[in-house]
Length: 175
Image (cartoon, rainbow, N blue to C red):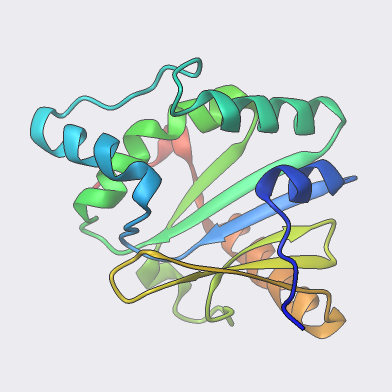
C-alpha cells in the first residue's frame, strides 16, 4: 500500500515544538523555482517580496507555525566556492528569516566528520522525518515519511551538530 506523504502545510501544522530542515545539495531543479531562478541568472534580481505569489504561501505557513511557539530552523551544507543555485538561494533567504525561520550555512569541508543521512530531510518534533528525495539533476523525486526512532535520532544528532558548526545567515559570506 502506498505511503501517504503529508503536504508541507500538514507537516508543519502538526509540529508542536520544532521543525528542522537539513539541505545538502549544491543545486536543486525544482519546477516551481525554475522561472525565478532563470530570471535571477539573467538579471541578478531575486524575488524577495514576502507577499509575492511565489513566497506568500510559504511565509504564511512559517508565520503561523512560529506563532504557535514552534521553532523552525534550516541549515544548508554547501560546497565552496558555491554554485549559482546556492547564490540564488542565499539571495532569497532574507524572506525565510522574515517569515520566522532561523537559517545557518556550513561549508561542506567542515562537515566531513559528521555522520549524515543520505538525503535532505525535515524532522518534526524530533520524531517524524520527511525525506526529500531528488533526482540526479535536482528535480523532486518525491517525499517519504519515517517514524523510525533510530533514524530520527540520527537526523536529530546530525542536524544539531551541523547547526552548532554553521554560520548564521547574516554572517555567512558567499565564496
